Length: 74
Image 1 (cartoon, rainbow, N blue to C red):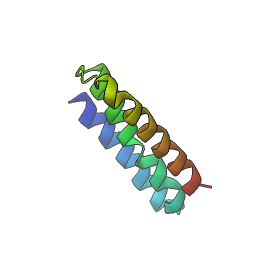
Image 2: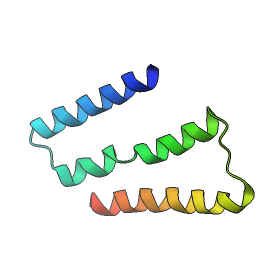
Image 3: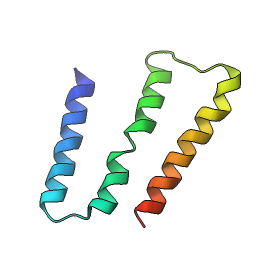
């Protein structure tokens, strides 16, 4: 329930920003960082800790998402 409320508030903030003539090219990467949040919450709250063979892939994937979002928003 809490996650749904947080998602709704974030989506509302993005909708308001777009309606205020915010640049979608800068807003989309911020909105799409939910992948990182989902990975972190899955590890912390659901105890979905990847085994040692997958840890490096998870870390590299998360870093690539952040770098990609930063590059698109420049």
